[in-house]
Length: 364
Image: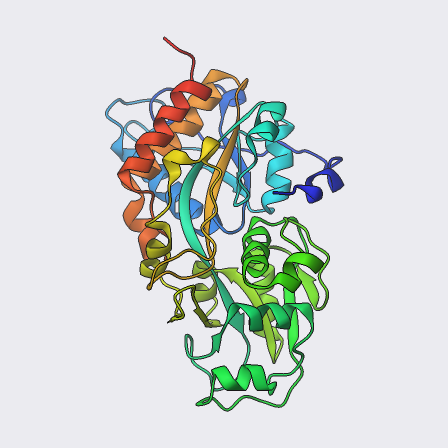
């Protein structure tokens, strides 16, 4: 697993972001929680933040200043900047935020060197999206090798025989394909390119998988939102975005042929099928990828969002951030599922909490 992109932005300017109060005790201004990074996880983190704010305002069992039991809360429950996985990594390493979010699981050696702990908090899917008039979501189909050839620039037209053979019932235009990809350091890119490398030896050799890659063709856009908007306004384009963003933007997403040879439309059910066989217990520091998973119903481009936290951070800040994730695990599953994410199963949540006790919280 490579991290070439991280060193390229080692001089990233770090800025502290405003963040929340906890629901269980009053923290000073210097102990408020902040996060930054993944745009893949931004939709669910936003919903969780709103729910956690309501919890602080009315769900706490003890009246604390700003909780809403005695006066309205004066701060948001979470201040999160969706600036991309790579930038989020740099910010948490620089102690500018309390957690970074990424879909790139760091190797144990890198975690140890940086003094970081890592744990998963949500699973979701990456949708391939197109801008083609008259084609409904889920109707256009791609195999992994054909998708790789499009992003390699080998297949350049929507009328190419390889695409037509997969879609005999569709009227595809005789038009040039415009490839849209991420321009920033992105965990979504890492998982997308990891998948392409698994299904295309040419992609693996020529491009590889990373947060930042040298794209053979196309133009870049920043963040999942940037790619979604670029595809939406560019006729005959193709790109890749987190599934919730594809749905929110009303983009046409594709069905992808999985390892079992079945054409699977992205959905929470298909993402859950891909995650069902994951051996998290056997993955040190939760280093596990879910791309190209086995299973008849598995969608092939599934990713996990991880939180990175500093082991030597002030305990008040650490506990505040873990309070938020605890509430999210226990109360936020339904909201996550409505967005098309897959909440962590109870057994994995238990593993995550055990990891907190050994890596982030002092032993009592």
